[in-house]
Structure formats: C-alpha cells, structure tokens
Length: 85
Image (cartoon, rainbow, N blue to C red; front, side, top):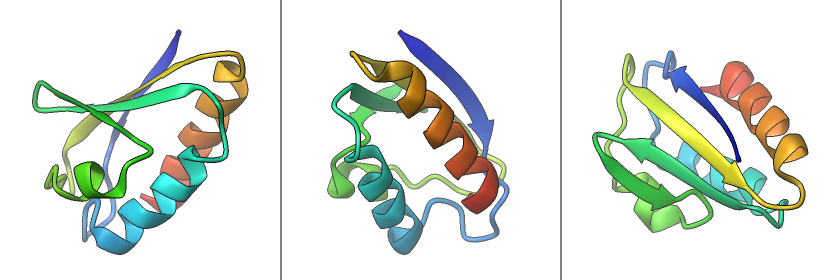
C-alpha cells in the first residue's frame, strides 16, 4: 500500500469540477484508491462520494492506493494534487 497526504491549496477546495477531474484521473488505474477526510474513507473513483466530502481550502486529505499499479497511481495522483488542487 502507498499513501500520501496533501493540504488543499486551491481557493475552491475540492469542488465539483475539481472532484470530477480527480475521479477521472483515479479511474485510469486498476488499484483500489481511497480518500480519507475527517475520519471518512471513501472510494476516490466515485464522483458523488468525493464531491460530497466538502473538502475546503486548507483541509488535509490522505490518499491510499493498493494494487498492482499502486506506485504509478500514487505518484501520478500526488503530482495531480500538487498541480491542480
């Protein structure tokens, strides 16, 4: 299992558009990918659950990746967070 934490820096937090793009990025991988926020663990590949988390600017999220392509998925997603969120 690979995991990383990230503090959301974007002014709009993890809003609907940002969540949609993030989910699409996660869906490129076969691994199970979860987002952890406020003691909730949700599937990062499901738009509704990600959008409903209510993640705002300054909030800390943790991403957990487990599967055959976990290393590539974790690296790609961490870069995505840094560049877009």
